[in-house]
Length: 409
Image (cartoon, rainbow, N blue to C red):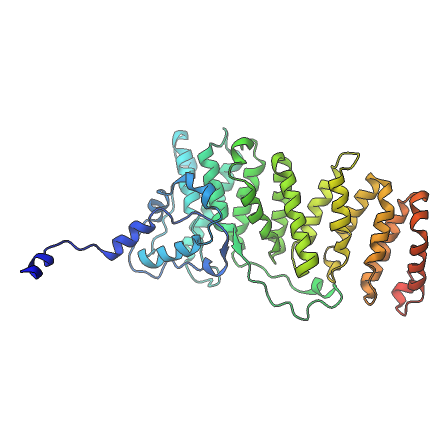
């Protein structure tokens, strides 16, 4: 009797429970590993309209979730559980009335939150092309839009950017690549296979940041300190094309969002500290120094103590790592900016160069001599006299060097 009663009770579907638990979380965002980008949208037999799923995402979740480490893992689970064999495009923005363009724009942003696997060039060709065309349309829309972006639109743009860009890098082995800092320049850079999509995402973000329709007061709620930290992490990319976009966009953010300027400088300082005193491995040193060169050029006089400490504790110790050749040119430019702004700093800079003078690396020694020549040309007699004795002692050692490039300098 009891078995008959139990058999009549309704049973919950395990699959429906999974769908309810995960629904609406398909495309949030960021800080995801490269491996988790390999979401498979075409191997399942069942069909689901992606646009209907992404449209259910709440825009208000963006600020809280753009650092979610598990997002692409969630996307991958959804793909496995629900199955995607249909990745539907949307009508073009130019084909809909102005009153509907904003909602369609948001749907297209959600559609572009889906991250594909580019390790297999034969997988999801149709879906990748749909996304590429959609991203191209987003670039045109952000460039030509008339009217301020609403807070909802800003949140959705940042959500799409975070979902595609924020990821962990898997560094290639670097053993035996650094001998005297020159060999790394001869290595072929590692190109990201997903660049055809990443470039368009960067282009959307760049045009969004520079757009006069982007309200700073609204945008700074999404481009917050956490977002900036994740964005700075991307500078360690081995793809020089990506680092060039990062440099341009960060410079624009620094210029437009004045409230974030002290935090950006502090965050970059922390990257330098870790590089100098811990790892001596980072791909974006040159690009970060190029940004700082422009920032230092705009420092007001007299220089703040904070900026002088940055010179003493960051820029001068950056001469220590073996891979100095990778970023010496922008570093030397930053140093010269300080000399030109405050001649009294010449003595500290020359003594700093002497402190980190290479003993067994002739190529670094030549770089030091070149930089020292530029500093001395801008040094006044009073500052020169204070460091004259240790300077000439070092020059005497260079004259006795067994390396012809050093002695002939």
